[in-house]
Length: 343
Image (cartoon, rainbow, N blue to C red; front, side):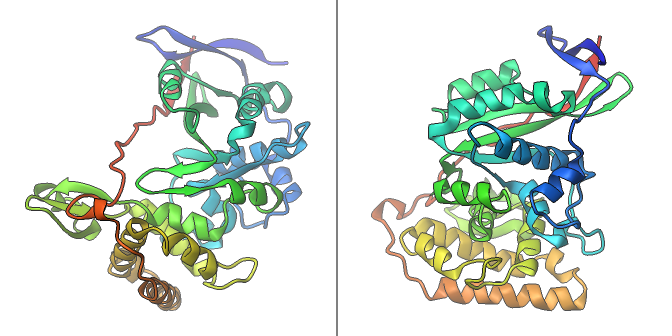
C-alpha cells in the first residue's frame, strides 16, 4: 500500500483529489496490449496510449462488459504503424483521450470510470474537476469531459483530458457511432478506419482573412467578403496521412471502406463538401511533401483515390446552406490538462 495524499487540482478554488502514491498499475500496459490482440508496434510506453489499452482491457473484464471504442490520436496509435514510427514525421504528442460509448450504457460507463483506480491501481484514476462538472451538466449526456492521472515527477502529477462521446460524433458535422462502438469493443477497440478518417476530415472553421496568414496551409477557400475557411490542424493531418498509408481504400477487414464512406457522404452535402475541400488541402500539404519518396507516392495515390470517390458523388445541396455555413460552428472547448501538485 502506498500513501494517500491530497492532490491540489485548482489552488484558486481549493479543489483537491485524494490519490495514492506512488502511482501504480496492476496490469502492465504491454500485457493489456497483448490481451487485446494488438501488434507489438503499438507503443505502450506513451502514458495516454497505456491508459487507452488499460481502459479497453478493463471494459472487457467488466461485469457485464462495457462497449468502448477509441477515436482521435490514441486510436490512430492503436491502428497505424506510421503513427508509432519516429522516422516519417507522422508521430505526434498526445494530449487527450477520446472514447465513444453507447448512450444506453452511459450510467454504467460513468460508474466504471469512477471505480477504475480501485481495481486497476492509482495510475488509472479518472475524475471530474469542477469545470468538468459544469461542462457535463450542459452536454445533454452526449459529450462528457473527465480528467485522468498520467505520470508522477516528484510532487507534480501530470494530468490528461478525456472526452466521452455517447452514440454520436457531433462537432462540425454529425454522424452516428453506435455501429462502430459495438464492433470496436469486439475488435481493435477503435472506431472503423472509415469513421476515423471522417472524424478527422470533418473539421472546418471560418476565420477572418487577416488570420489566414498565420495558417496559410490550412486555407481552403474564401467565405463571404471578409472570411476564409480553414481545414484541420497539422496534428490531424498527420493522423489522416498515417491512416491512409496503413489502410487501403477497399472492403478488406483492415481497409477504409469506400462503401461506408459513400453511404455517409452521399446523403450529406455539407460533410461531402468539407471532406472534398480537406482532401485537396492535404494533397497540397508540406507534411505530405516531406514524406520519403515511397510513402509520399503511396499517400498521394490514396488521396487521389479518395478524391475520385468524392467526385463520383453528387449529394443534393439543401437550401439552408445557400450563402451560409454548411457546417456546425463549434467553439473549441479548452482542456485543462497540465500538472497538479501534492500537498
